[in-house]
Length: 271
Length: 236
Image (cartoon, rainbow over all chains, first blue to last red; front, side, top):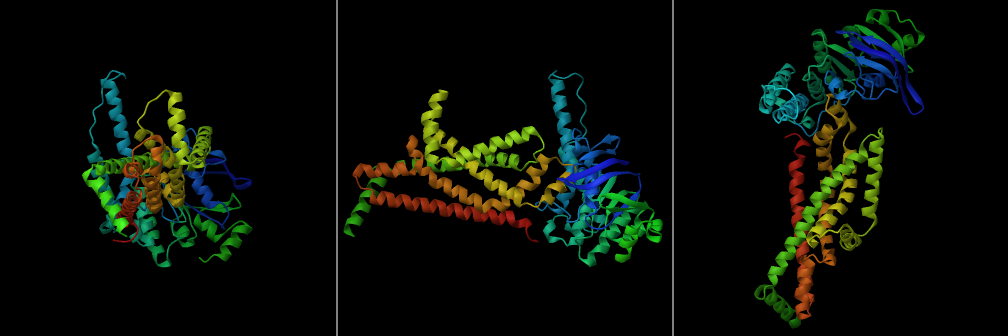
């Protein structure tokens, strides 16, 4: 599904990622762990070009999205992302947060269709006008329906019209997760989704993530939650100093780490 | 004291019985038109410039636009408003062979000028919004422009509202120089009342009071807008 080929990323003279190549298959739950400063978050952020790779390619849906000529926005719609600090839109209510991208994308398509039809009617463009079977109202109603369904799933339908500032951290993160789900992504990237949460709220977010994993969502997760990595992960990538030092199933990695660095790391983290 | 009351009576006589109020109303109208239209043009120009200036500068076109914008801001912040009015009216218009009413000239210059100031205010506002907001928008596939217009700028506007109020107040007061190009503003209205009787004390006092009243009204207006916009700040 995602093929990373010779990915390098530098910030100025500081090379953060060194020639990373890996393939993420459909349905995999890849968990990236490693010490801080090892480049895990940068790697994840390169996957959807939130950071532009310095060199190398990222093949997603058959297209190299690292190519600056590619319209990255189209591909990001199929590649959700969940951030450490949630990044919900503060000026929008919860339901608006969820509806925003689906409505925007659908209305944009509708407008394009209408424009094409107008040109065809004026004989400025060849072909007969296509039938338009939807309207802005319908798009909005549909998106709202779906958003409410998603909110029900996380039990926050009563918060639909609240602003993010009135939610707890755990609630914000769960809303952020369903915001990315609203676009029906093929894969979701999680950038330390529980690191900014109160300990009490970590559970509810991890539960939702497990729920997603059980439904077969492809996930790439950067986390410090070793329990989650063990339980949910199908593959562990251990990163250090900008390279993937070790990879394997959770059983292999946690049971029998191969490198000194990973042994050292695992001995220091609580499992 | 008697002298002052006499002067007030004389002023009121001109104002109410000899048609002075018409001039004052026209002046007030022009002052407000110039300030409001100038502010609106300024907001449009300022937002555009600010957006260009905070754009990531990978492309040569963006870098060129950025250069132009900083030149523009430097030009309009580097010269006094009066000079801009005079240059526009007496240099630019004849050179371009255009004819414009003096109020229109004033609106144009005020718009261009406040655009330069508002761009810096807006840029600060945009930079004050958490970069995560932009990332959040981009991560769900919204374009840079869409995220900017729908997510970042609305939050930036909320942050800069007090400063924008300041800018508007400054614009209202600065309209008092538009008589340099012959626009009939509040100052010109009271000046002509005064010169009719060679008695300036009361007209100018009245003018000052009117300016203060306008500014107070604007302050109240801004306060109301701030309260409206802060609804997403706290839980309801």
